View 1 (tube, rainbow, N blue to C red):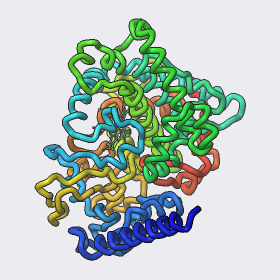
View 2 (cartoon, protein in one colour):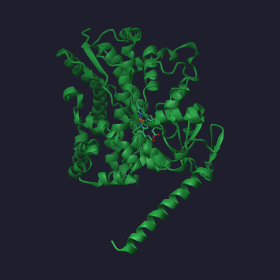
View 3 (cartoon, rainbow, N blue to C red):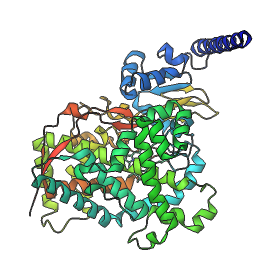
View 4 (cartoon, helix red, strand yellow):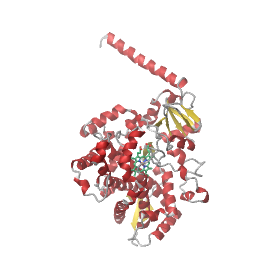
Amino acid sequence: MEEGKIYLLVISILAFVAYRVVQGVYNVFLHPLSRFPGPRAAAATSWWKTYVEVVRQESMVHVLVGLHKVYGDIVRVGPNELHFANPEAYHDIYRSELRWDKEAKLYESFGEDRSSFGLLRYGDAKQRKEVLQPLFSRRAILGMQELVGEKVDHLVQVLVKNQAVGKSSDMLFALRCFTVDMILDFCFAKSVDAMDEPDFAAPIVVAMDNSLPTFHMFHHFPWFRKTILSLPPWLALKASPETAGLTQLQVILGKQVKDVTTSPSILEASPHPTIYHRLLDPKVRNSNLLFEDGALFDEALTMLFAGGVTVGDTSMTGFFHILDQPTLYSALRSEVLKAWPNINNPPTLEALESLPLLTATIKESLRVAPGACSPLLRIVPPTGATINGTFIPASTIVGMSSFFVHQSAAIFSDPGTFNPYRWISPDSSGLEKWLVAFSKGPRSCLGMNLAWCELYLLYATLLRRVEMRLDGTKREDLEWRDCFTPFYPGRHLRVFCEGVEK
Ligand code: HEM
């Protein structure tokens, strides 16, 4: 290289470094958020988060717990970002009358920009959710009980088959296989029969699990995400083996979408309405400008993660704690047996909903399971906002992880203990407000009714039709890392499942 060019290059690099230093100094001392406490490095640059999540591979929710202990209820976790710890703040951010946008960098990392979950603006998401809402209404879900029941029965058959050859079952993957089969049926009236794969290691479930830690790379390096997602699968697999999970998922799901869009007659044969009936309805498509190419795929991917991982993880957490407490397990089995005396005649969802201990146990599972554990980031509107009694300037990125509400000792005494009875004790009124697993406000969970239905039928059936015993799983095995939803790097929950005859 010529001397002049080298000189120019050095000057450019120095100018860039100087610019970054000046920007960092501005961020720390002069930025509108400079009065909020937090680590200096986080105030100076957004690379602090990248360092924590990508280089150190730490779990941000757990890091936030430590930071709030040091800095108090409001912590500055980025040049323009605040995290809150006081449970009251949750309702200040996720209130139903607020119309705040989702934060672009976080939500674009999922590669689901054109889905009900990924659309950033309230108005766009509302339009999409209105299309899908009829399928998720309480009435629609009551009509889906039979389908959910069939899937749960199938799960029981496989669990018992494993036991017949002396094997325990991997319940994390078993329950995710159940929800994946359920969601794909609900979307496409078609199943990949994940539950029938040996050891529940269905390619789609393994791919989803492998793709969870990839989330941080996609979040912090958008150019990397764009490159990988634009490559043909064979090249993406070669170029980035660590994101192979997501590439495989794209292929599997892409095939499902292609099958149903090229042969919509698949849907005609469906015994129940599906998400694709709604999305492919010409009336809906013609009146809805948001249906660009790719929206169908994005929506399917959303349903798979939003509906598959969450229900699976919640029930896995719940069953670990139930089996870890023999007295609770036996009380639950007695309650379900009373409501379900004839094994061949299962009760309806409505009947199960009236069982106090079962209901309390599902609530406690939703509280204790990490769920969508990351702070759900929102942008403060131009008027600014008051959160936790403090004025927050316009355009600030704000968020709060549900973990801080669910683990608050001021609300839930002894929060680290799985105790369903807290939901039915005389002083439990008022606790409901603090169950925020499905979030609150206009961007709260679309699939909540379906999730409750799946959880009721799953819990009741496993309690009634199976006798379960832990295969050596310890509490430490359930340690998780915040990858928006939890990633479980340890040994999965394993359970022996003996079939009950009558
Ligand atoms: C225990 C199970 C579930 C939990 C804990 C859960 C939790 C959540 C949470 C916290 C959000 C808000 C995310 C955000 O603000 O970015 C959300 C949104 C969403 N959930 Fe769920 N969910 C569950 C089950 C389901 C199911 C079964 C489906 C559908 C198949 C579903 C579909 C959605 C969709 C489409 C959104 C996006 C809504 C929006 O952005 O406006 N979820 N869920």
